[in-house]
Every structure is written in C-alpha cells, then in structure tokens.
Image (cartoon, rainbow, N blue to C red; front, side, top):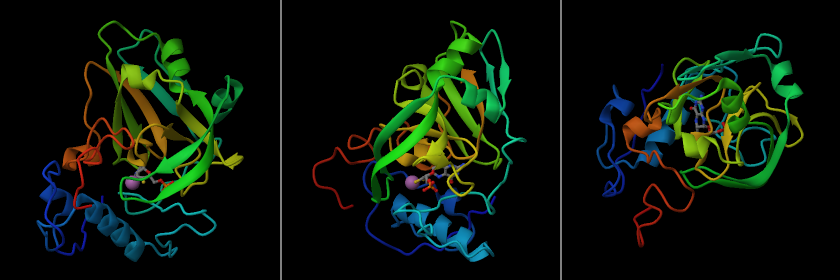
Length: 242
Ligand SMILES: Nc1nc2c(c(=O)[nH]1)N[C@H]1C(S)=C(S)[C@@H](COP(=O)(O)O)O[C@H]1N2
Ligand SMILES: [Mo]
C-alpha cells in the first residue's frame, strides 16, 4: 500500500478532524493539513507512481476524480469477478457478475459528492440492492453491521445494517448506462447514494456481516463513520474553515 504523501502545511485542523499521522507516514507530515489534503496527497502519490499517467480528473470522466489508496489499479475481468457475502449469515454465498445481473436491478440517479468538495450531479448507478443480497444470505440476529472489502487488498468500508438495507444503497455494475470502468471500481463497486463518496467502495469483493461497525479505511484517519452528505465531517458545523 502506498501512502507516502506530500502534504503542505495548511489551515488549522478542524476540531472534529483527527488527522491520522500514520496515514500520511514517511514524508513530512504536516499537522496543519486538513484531511482533504491527505486525500489529495494520496491521489498525487498514486498519480506520480502510475505509469498510465492518470491525472486527478479522469479523462472523459465528467468531473469525477480518481481515487485509490492502492498503488495500482487492480483488475478483475467480468468472468473472474466474484462477490462474497459471509460473516454472521445463515447462507454464505459467492456471486459472479452474471449472477448479479440476473437479480432484480435498481437504478439510482443522484449527485455524487466527495468529501473534498467536488460533486457530479445526476449520476446514474445501476445494480443490486445490498438489502437483497443480505436477505438471500439470511442475516443472523447478532448481525448489526456490514464490512465491505475490496480486491485492491487495502480499502475497507462499513455500514450499519439499517443503512445497508436502505433502498439507495446498491452494489453497482453500471454507471451512466455503461459497465463501471476499472478506474471507477469495476466490474462492481458499492454505491451509497446518501453518503460522501468515500463510503462507495470500489473494486468490491466482500460483504461480511459483523456484530458492530468496523470503521473503514479513511474512518480510521478521522472521517465520520456516519458520512451523510451535508450532515457529517464538519459540514454541519456553523461556518468552518473548509
Ligand atoms: N477501493 C477503494 N474505494 C474507494 C476509494 C479508494 O481509494 N479505494 N476512494 C473513495 C473515495 S475518497 C472516493 S471520492 C471515490 C472516488 O471514486 P472514483 O474514483 O470513481 O471517482 O471512491 C471511494 N472508494
Ligand atoms: Mo473522496
């Protein structure tokens, strides 16, 4: 995992921002840096190491920025792809992409909002409700949350069971009418419409039902676990230094 970021000293750390120094390890950790800068520095690190020359803005990406905390873009072909549902369930299962496509499809058209400020309105994601996958697996009474894992081997996310059961939380294999590209986390990524985009784990490989929420990758470095757009990560504080 590559997390050597170059971080500029910046504005004071917001009172709810706990900067995980380890997140930025190695090269000069600037305490004043906002977490947003942490993300951007990771992006810069990835780009500087990526021979494909991906820049911050994805070509033809319609305003999307590319993020990965892994040093290269992992790849799974449509036929190799597998999604595992396990943990505190009665019927653990593994899905192929074809399995997911054969299930009832949900289409969401919402705004994508990254916590660093960029926003892409009216983005379409289609796929399977996480709720349906959990229903098929049979969540045991002790199960109260899910942990999402990714085939980049690094990124994780989490949701409470209630959040996971919402009708705007899907496992998406289509974005804007086309297969989710590898850069956007394909063949299959999570899409949590009501929350900041860091909840939407790319390159999704596993859904594990757990007893309690296990904070995800960025959440271990200070982001809110409950990442409601407009109501978390300091956005509900009266004017901030953002
Ligand atoms: N596996 C994985 N998923 C991830 C991330 C990541 O680094 N790795 N970054 C998150 C963040 S912070 C954002 S803003 C979005 C970016 O998605 P995009 O690259 O399709 O624009 O993916 C989220 N999901
Ligand atoms: Mo993000």
